[in-house]
Length: 290
Image 1 (tube, helix red, strand yellow):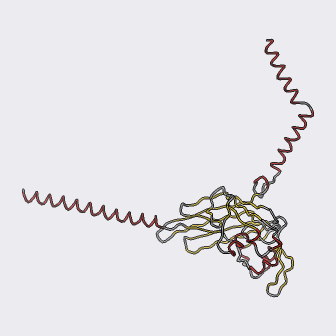
Image 2 (spheres, one colour):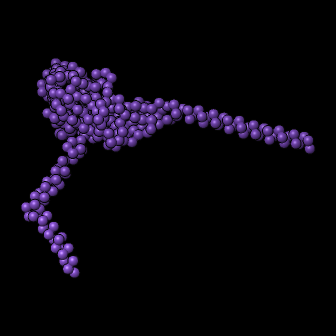
Image 3 (cartoon, rainbow, N blue to C red):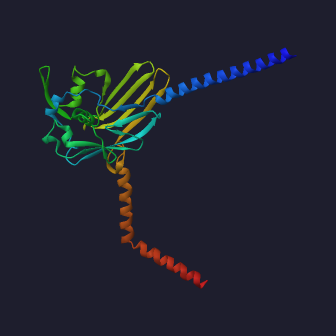
């Protein structure tokens, strides 16, 4: 009996030790996995223009008349879905759904064409987005509009007052596979795969006449070595009068306002307000007499 009791006690102790040992190992593994997830750095993406700009040609470019002193061009962050660890930045500002990006032109661009940073600034809502080097400020501007015409030499060929998109469409220095040229719009699309699970896709739609960016679609997904996922879907849309999207006419605002003004004028001319007031007073008198 004593041997049986000793054996039983030893069995219970062995089982208890194994349970605690497995629990501690599981806890350590969970803690390690948890730490890997928590210490994974966030992914920050900045939006850049589709083509690498040759700063020399900025001496000989002109812009659409809408790009002038005191003009404010606006884009709104529309669809914006992202994981917690993914942020898109404009300058030093992290963007969020509903933000308005404003490109404000402070002085006449034609006085200092190549010095873009001296005549316009980018704001996120009402706060200036700051860039470190000057070249980044120049690149930031060209995300939103491109020169409408240019005059420069490339490989001995003189392009005189040609549209920028005509240059893109005909130049051998431009990767044509990224661009689609139509009568009224020009579309840039590029998909970058750095790894099997790391994919970035960007599509920009420009208005061909003005060179302004109408829409930007951006999506990215990243999976690191530990299987930690980060991703985003992002849309920018250009605004115009009354804060409407570029493809919605301001007539949807002006026509109802015009009809209201016309109706008000008709009501005043026909004394409709006075007649309605008399009608209400007559009803009161009739009710009293009843």
